[in-house]
Length: 142
Image (cartoon, rainbow, N blue to C red; front, side, top):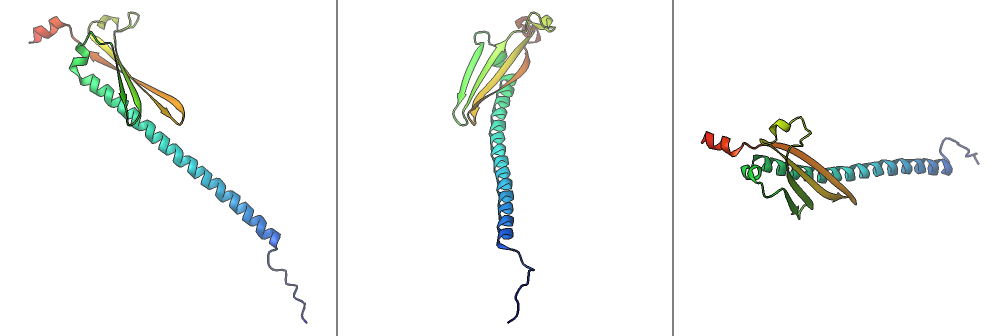
């Protein structure tokens, strides 16, 4: 009989060790991919809500009624889908501000949105300035 001692192959231990290392590498990469996908979905939801807040700011900015209102200082609006609480405030210029000379002509529209994302409360605030001429100036133009 011939001696069959050909040592050119891998042992069972070497194959199992290689499979373990490969499994660990694939698991790590797939975990990173899963986390990345989850983060992209979270960011997409946040961007959608930020867009809604921005749309509210633009709507209020171009609304002549809002700039002329004196009776309503704060308006709260709640959206169902997506869940978002919008708060719009009409503020006067701070007397300490460098814009105090324009106190009667400019109003500040402060719009903020609040929502929950992944168990965390998130909030964004956007500010716009609206020109609000005095009633005498408006009557002169007409």
